[in-house]
Image (cartoon, rainbow, N blue to C red; front, top):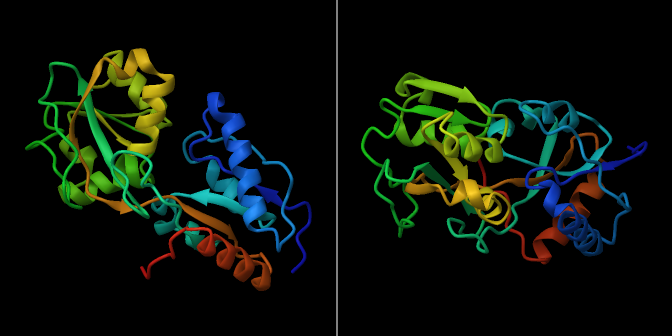
Length: 246
C-alpha cells in the first residue's frame, strides 16, 4: 500500500528543550533505515493525555514510538511493533527494559537505591494515605506497571488520584505539594533532573517499579509489508532489540 503524505514522530521523550536532540535522533534513524523512503522531518502531535491515540491511529504513520500500555489496551490493532530501543543509557534501564522511580518530597520517605534484579522494590503500602499523580491510566510506566507490581488498581489504594497529563507535570505536582507521589519512567526522570532541576531536587526516590518492556518503535498496520520488514531488519542490525512474544 502506498503511503500518502507519510508521517513520522518521536513523541515520547520530546520535551521542548530536546527538540534539536530528537530531530538529530530522527536523522540517525533515517540513515539506519536508508533502504526505505521516510519523511525528512518529524511531525509533533499533541501529546496530552490520551491525545496521542488519534495520531497513532493515522494510517499514514510510517514510524513512531508507542508505550506498551496503549498497545496492550487496543493500539496494537492499529500499530505494528518494529523493535525495542535500548534503555541501558539511563539508570533504571537494561536492554529493552525500563522501570519507574517512585518519587516523594524530601523527608517523606526513605531514599532507595536501584534494585539489583528485575523485580519491583517498593515501600510497604506505598500509596496508602497519599495523593497519587499519574500521566494517564493507559501508561505502562506511570500507572499500569505499578498496578501490576501492587496487584491492584492504584486508584483503589491511594487517598486520591490526580491526572497530570505527563511525567513532567507529575514531577512538578509532587514538588509543589499538589500530589504526594508519582512513578516516573527512568528516561523521563533523567530528563526531569536536566530540565526540572528545582523540582527534581526537592524529591527523593523511595522505590522502583519492576522492569517492563520499554517504548517500542512502531508503524501503522497500513504500512507496506516490505517496508515493515526493511525497517525492522535495519533497526535490529543497528542494535535495537527484537519485540518479544506477548
